[in-house]
Length: 248
Image 1 (cartoon, helix red, strand yellow):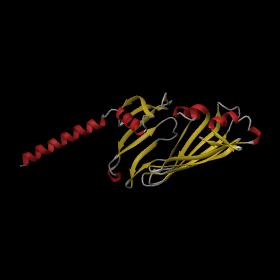
Image 2 (cartoon, one colour; image 1 turned 60 degrees about the horizontal axis):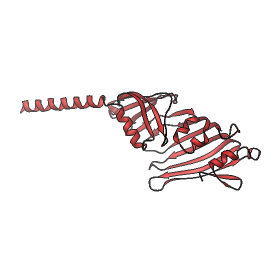
Image 3 (cartoon, rainbow, N blue to C red; image 1 turned 90 degrees about the vertical axis):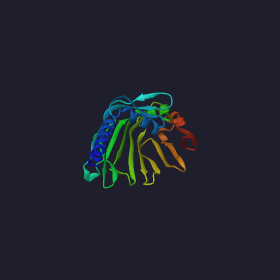
Image 4 (cartoon, rainbow, N blue to C red; image 1 turned 30 degrees about the vertical axis):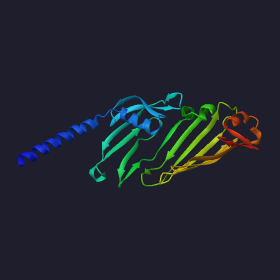
């Protein structure tokens, strides 16, 4: 009986050892396949190196016709958390567009994503397709968030500073902000507003699994720049009196 238990224990230990080694050396392309599936092939990883536990890659965005690899490398490193924190793996992520290291960890029976921000050229938005590949934006984009917990709502503050377009001689167009809130149940609502500039943008967006995505917004030029902005506005939407309905 004792010999049988010893053999069973040895078999279990060996099996767990092989399983741990397999998971530890799982190729990083597994992450790429998961990312492609989750984003409907719009986001992928290229020039991948390392494993799913520790590696690096470039992020590529596909707009349906062209794939664009963004500058800089995404680097990730997985480490085991203390037993007091659940003994689960934690993840550290870095990229040149983030000024601080992003930490994903298990705390108090919920997942936490550390507060951080993204800062990148607005020209990168062209890779996402319509309408940005038509507008050809310039300027700077920032996305800021506080600590995110898996059981709570959270808000993203998105700003487009020194906003410009290749379709307009008016530079800058303005400074814009989107406050996007993701509720605990997974629904999204967002408000677009103008902080300054000759082109006023305003709107509201919402998304839910049952109702899908909806957006209603308007662009209004200042009186002094109305003629200069006509070409850009005609690409942004349909005119309704002295303003343009976005996306129509």
